Length: 359
Image 1 (tube, rainbow, N blue to C red):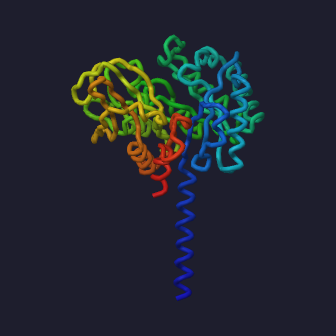
Image 2 (image 1 turned 135 degrees about the vertical axis):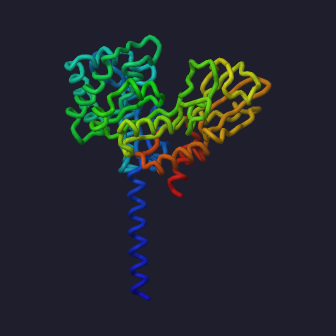
Image 3 (image 1 turned 90 degrees about the vertical axis):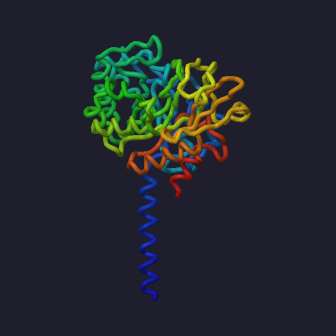
């Protein structure tokens, strides 16, 4: 009996060890763009990475914009006392933050200067690497920001310069558009991915603020009226040879709302005008009077207010649990989301992710 008990305990220990290892390998990555005041209350133990958003170019160098941002980064790094495994990364750009990228990264001298500045900032703050958020190389992004065909090769050269300068000590990732045009045209995946730890695929804003027809902005699957989806992006990248263990699925901690939307099919795939984004923490009372619907094909929620003719598309607890399980089942690197300060302090969207992983 004692022999069997010993074997049972040993087996249980091995299962627990493998489970812990698998959980460690699966990343839960939060972008964070708020100030230093909230940092002490962030759920550091539930995360593998926090990415400070954003730093910007000044000349050819990566710079922290102000003293407030410096304070935020320092406090984020201090969270390692709560979670020693936590990685804190700095990032470049954002949707409106990379106006100079196409020009600066077009020369080897500027790329080298930038890479040295990235190393210097990481050394100074004790951070763990860089996330590039250039929206977008090669194709149009923020209105008026320059882009050109040469960006594709220059992005590869930038990643090569950064990896050479940072070495293996620091992590290197980038935020990729989750839509087909970006996947097809912006990046030389074969050349870039060996240089990176992961790619954070922005599988949200797939129907963006310039759209005049509603749709799901962050669906898990495509449907007959909308090809763009999380699954479409991930499977497209896998077909291009991107390793599964370097792919990260994105979630949205905010809704997108359109106005003047006709009461047809509960507002889904109808003409309208983008009104605003609504942070998850502010959904109550904003969504009072909205009806909630679920697209079984796309595995995505949406809402419609009949009297006000407002349509909303978003992730919620159910859709994020399904995205997380999808990432696990597909053996991906993990999940990430925009943005940590938009969540509720208790029983929020991050908890939906963590509860799924704990099953």
